[in-house]
Length: 599
Image (spheres, rainbow, N blue to C red):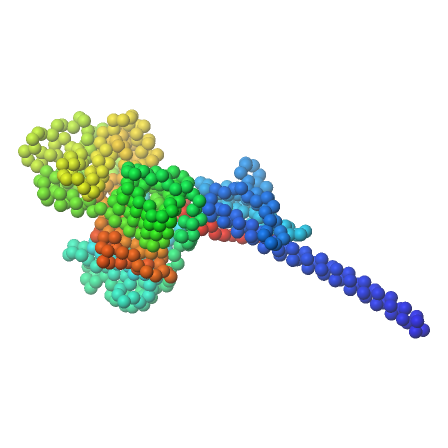
């Protein structure tokens, strides 16, 4: 009985042992499978990070990976970009960062422009995982307050901060200013008039996190008749700055890009592509961004104008001196680590002083201002069909401003100052008056401005009117004979585009400077001398120390986050730049994940 019992128990124990071994083996298999599955997901995420690092350097990167191995870890990952037409494979990735419209993706997905759909396949052991993500780096910049700082705001003199929806329609929108700074030694936001006629106009809200009462934290002076503000708000909530990324990192990421070819004088054009400058860079002349992106590891100074469409990244300061005029369809993004200075030239003040010393200049300058104002009024409020055509109201106006060979001859010599108006060509005669003065930067600046305006309003003699009008409609800019060609051809469909140009040439801005786009800095912002910014200004100096000198007065310095606008500096918020659409301002900043899903 003992033997039989022992044998039976041995059989039971053996069966239990076999069951235990099978359970352990099965559990080990399941555990290894779970481990490999989780590891494969981590490998896929590593593959996505690898793709994003390549896209941040080159937004058009499409090489992909074919079994890329992990370092010191098991696993490989695959990324395949699809560039053909027809049905998109399920495991294909689509790079549409530089695209102008949405593209179809795998599984019926739609890849929006300025984004990429990345599908990563990863394998570890016997496990395979896929993840799908939408990333972008060329997004629309989110702007809640078009003028916002982390520090103090100082406005001096006559200042206007307003907004329009679009440069094409002039529909008005509110434009406010905001400071995230708390109590400082002085006011957080301050406006100071500089003479008895100065007035501050801000169409939106003036708000600050500062809890001090209005008049202390936000101080526009005791006389409320001197300013027109949408509303004041103290103890406001903190506002988030747009995610522009680390400026120094962007500059360093593009260190392998070729250096720009800078012309010693005249115009420097940067076509589509990336350009990296190691050390400070000075451009003596105009800089045209023809789709190019300039990365400067140091300070950037432009002694001339900036135009076109593109982006500038600088690890130091950015300083614009002179005529920074961008056309209505063009916009730029300037990102600076240490600060931005817009030092425009006050041409109106220069011409007013010149007119005081010469009676003929006074007559010509006053007549020029009046004619420009009348031309703007005709374009803005008159039936289009009634103002075009040879000999029509607009034609009569431009015969006063530019050179037309069939105009009557001016009397020689000029007996009375008013005789200078005979034969029109006011702008050309003012240019000749300036040419007779001693050489200097101010004179040369105004001569260049007046020459461009004179050519714009002069007779079109280079090509047929219809051809020149079509070229202007395709790319509206201040080009020779353009106004005359549009008027003579009767192109009423181009009058709104002429309106944009004439508005920027109006008498109040005839010598001023413009920047059109967005300015973002981790340092300070300083604008002076009738500079007008069309777009938005973001000054985020959080976490930074030190200061930078005022370029016009080295005895004064600006702290990170400080925003200063003086001597007629203004800003107009253009809402359309910051809304998704054809005219949105898009920049290639840090690549970010927008959506993520494991397949």
